[in-house]
Image (cartoon, rainbow over all chains, first blue to last red; front, side, top):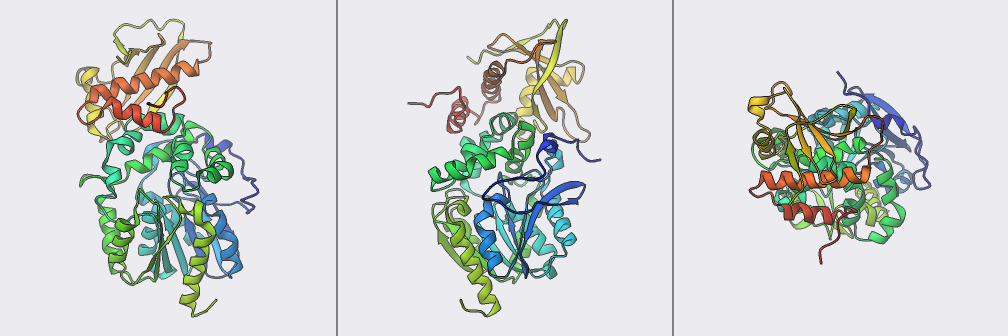
Length: 312
Length: 134
């Protein structure tokens, strides 16, 4: 049975913002209402966000990718953005989120797709790619991981990471006080003044109530910290299958990324995907799209043009 | 001092329970579940009664422990403020009471979990009632 409906049901069906002029579209996947945008025509580029973001993170990517003759699909994970927001933690699993994405992209009959993966868009997007290889053409990987232990030294520390999402502390700090969509994202960009003036309130406003923010403290609890972790086998599978894969890939990382630092994480991806281009370094902390969106979009266009044998 | 006190006897006459915080996975770190089992004698009491605590504002809170098949008990925990039946909550009091509850809980869980780290986390995320450390 589906979890009960939460306050997200009161969100407007259409989000109106000058930086996000795209038509909202919805599909029902696994019983949940999933929001996405679908702009342009051509081979699809699927832009995947993580915690606590939504498609808005990619607002600087859509136009240049569409202008280059590509179809751009930007889903909001169930639990974030304009998608339905389950109000029970048990509604969220890593496999469930991969299945949500798979449900959406199969309904859209996506073929020859480039999966652009960031944060939890990494394990979910790569999970889709590795279980639907015939639909995927290439990977773009940014500030994420796809192996079991440890994600980063940062994630093993009690202050601030484990404390932030600890039992009761998570619902209090990230739920009642919306700490991750507000202060958390603010701390994870380089140009904080610009972020505060142009984006922070947008991220905060789509998570308006404590119950709507549940995934912000649930995702951290899915990062494996030891061999008893719930997602251990899935991450082992991701690492194993990624290493066997031969998708063309581009690695893009923020120079200032302190959570998934490029020396550790981009290097590890390069070991798994030795043929990958990059890492291309740009100005950015974890949410590098906020600081270097247009530059990363240009790098993706260049990468795909090279795959197409085109020169720009 | 956290200002949290376990109370055994509560007069519920004229009161309502107002849900103020919900945790679906109190055993995410098992030492947190063990803390509640220990402090509220849950191996003996089970689901027979809520736990009650009095917070710094003077308000009493009911802790409703939730079981789920296949999971150690308790799996979830709801915190309800006991308020006058027809009166709205004082949200500011609830906020600071809950923070006092967090500090009491972390102190009780112990081991590597330190109140200093909780306070530092609250300061990092700029809880409005906490002042940055000098």
